[in-house]
Image (tube, rainbow over all chains, first blue to last red):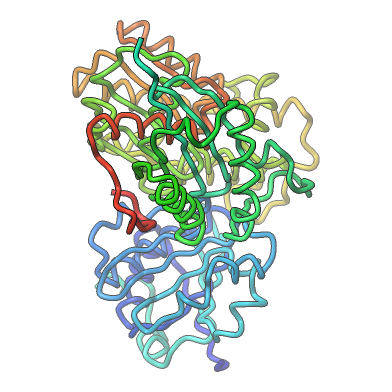
Length: 163
Length: 343
């Protein structure tokens, strides 16, 4: 884990999606993204962006896996979307076969990752924290990004993410 | 009188381990769901039995119980059916493996069904009706989908949620209001004493003709209502009166029901359906049942709703759909595998 932390302000749903897209475009496979944020913080929107960045065809297909626990979407790399909201402890994540999803062909995103840190911290995740900062504005902190992501996002104004 | 066709159904796609024996696709001889037979002490409400191990522990007792209740033996069974998609692969594989094994040992046909499609059959359990062609709404914690159904086997998807399922919105709003899990029954109970017009929560209809759903926005709207627009204010819920909570629950429920009913009627008109079918866990919600009944009456569309006990996941609906597949000779090979995504 590196000490890098990038902080970005997203002013809209579109900017959040664009940020997810940018991050995913720089993924090479095998990444684990731990996503932390309250209800309504924009986690699903960020993941829709990540799906776009991985060339998942229909981003409307990307829906919340709160009940299904794990959704998988084929793209340039497989997007594995896990939701820990209903899990009671980190062991339950292991019982889902979590270690098998960490694979060079996959980008694995875990929502509500703060509920299962015990397991996922072993995999050196990129941790993304999303905070409410107004009706549509969100503060997004990225911890332990890959060097590519750091280079692409540092000093970049969020509004330029669309370009 | 011809001998009825008796099918054993097995289900382990999500939280519930279930077995049921159904004659002729609708006559339920037994219907056993693991959480009902209390194999484990409940701790802090309903626990999602996600682990394949939990399904494994439950499967044989559930199976035995299904035979006991039906007062039948394996010799009475004409076919073995199982939901092999969609769901969690490690969960699905338990019932799939059991069904394959039983079919092989007993030398009976094996039938694989789609769990979501089978929710439609729950509408016809114990009361077979002529309802096809129909427009169907399947609404649960994991799904919110509209189908055009020519018959039990030909389903065309017309719309679905693009973010959260309706049932999930109920659960998350229950969490915001500090109401117990599962959220559907909690919200419904709390809403009983509330004014559904107290707060006008947004109804996300998407495009004018869209049959897709979005329930993420209303969840956030409830959150902001309780904690302020920027989430920087304090959480008002602990200080709220029961009446205020009831008003929020009722207003939220009214908004969700409104969207579900409008889109269902919109879809029924688009395909000129003569009947509407309603199934899935959220179909147990009385406000939804009543509102959809009222609108269907106005439009002279016949409405068929699953009995409340068959709304949530069960295996009777699996055996129900399998009956039609057996009649159509759509059998599965013993090499059947679970599939995470449903077709």
